[in-house]
Length: 200
Image (cartoon, rainbow, N blue to C red):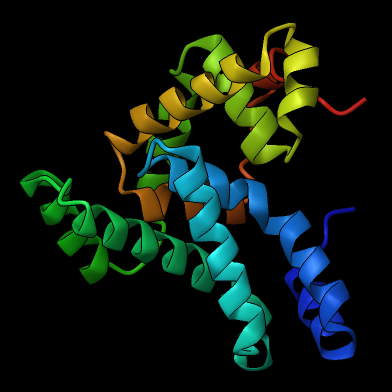
């Protein structure tokens, strides 16, 4: 059973070490995939996420975070850290700057039309790319487990994941896309479930 946000925050109040462990298990991989859609360097992404977790624990942010806002806080903080990194590196293009301004102004809400559009975009991805996104993002499987089940290398899994997310980000703002994938428990249609990876 997947750890809930309420479970994580309750664990923090009782035993911060246990809370930190649950936070890492629940959010590390989704945040890695999220930051990788902005920044290609894996080590930079790891640094951003580790610093985010460190600040969350050191400043005891969990004491003033509600379960329903935990995901929003983590993803928005990770996004801002990525954008700050790009600005510092002077690799932020004019188009990306415009996208940032739009992201900062928009509320993360999902209309039925938007949900349908995101679903169609995922369904239209190349089959292996869609399978990787299903396994890593939706089913929260490990890179190694996904590689074994698909009979491909771990590096290929990472490459397919990065390419798929980049394709989706060309159509949707990253914040909307990842909140949809991570929070909505994206339900794949039956014909996609037959081709996607499922838990044994």
